Length: 102
Length: 420
Image (cartoon, rainbow over all chains, first blue to last red; front, side):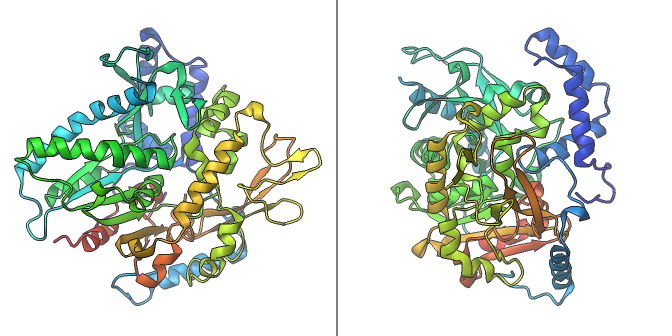
């Protein structure tokens, strides 16, 4: 997702996945007991709210929805990029307005 | 009281505080300053509803028992094997029980590390005094199942409660539905219902909802989910395979493609020129709903993985219904879709034979315009093209998970619902 001006820095899918994998390494067993859950909370408290929220946003975008990786130009064929360019040109063109803008 | 009856009863009970909030808001204002008063229900996207699990198991005969719940989706523990608790067990035709007979119900929207979706939408509703209700739903279950809960159980209960709390005002006299992502599949199903309680239904709006499937789900039958797997990949795959709802998220059946090929390819900006799922070697169609075999080789993982051919057949029926003609109902139906202008939404996959399942037989082979999750060609019903009921949000910020909250989307919802 593109960065929004003035917002906390976004994390990439890879960074969010790395964050989750690090947590999985620290907790190889599902925390079930009060003590285990408290340890998990203590672990999460070592990160800033800003960092956690950035990870939370990215994870919500990726989990059970899309690959936890950034789609890069190598994923995209030349024709697809041409389509994207057409799309951008259309977006910059005169506003057609009204209902049913497609 | 059966497990299913108890689950529904508990679901309604858990929603009561939010119904009370609706009543409080309803009594605090007189609706929008201009325009007629109406109720708007938002159905969150597929993973957007928070799920909670009973702390004790259901016991037959315990009709009066009220359960305490703990969050099972979505929190940090979900990534540490906790998602395995979401597993469903089939115990009869269209009958499912939660793991360990501990009832799971939907309660609000997810909040992970302090981040929740739809915050701007709900703030906007309050700002313009729009009577809104966010209806969380169990996204593991089939579209028809959730639609039935909403129409047959929730709406009559909601109407009764609001009438009792709002001087007999009927919140369903005029109401509309908005469904985000898979929530749009549910509202699409509801739109097709003939239930009398829907007499006041005005508009049905989908936002980023697939009508013809998308490429993400096929991977999960083989790979689980990179974020959830941890050291439990096989368990996560079995868990995901146990969700009947997921079987309707794959690319459309080839017959549905063939019936709509002209219109799918006829979209001037977002055409679908060919069937999106093909064999890795030959390029011939590989229909997820009609998996071929090749000698001893097949398309799907073995039964031990939890993959269920019966659910696949039901999933196909769901997709066919949701993509089928709407008749006069199409006049009330609107689709909003996103295009981030980056052309980086996965659009087509190839499929190799299995075994082996490692590495995955599914490969993403092309990307197109879309909202990073759903390609733009799938997020509108082709019948709406001629009506001008397809709205495309073109912006780098028209990203799937925030599409409902995006100001341009809210502006279009204002227009569609004839709000001030």
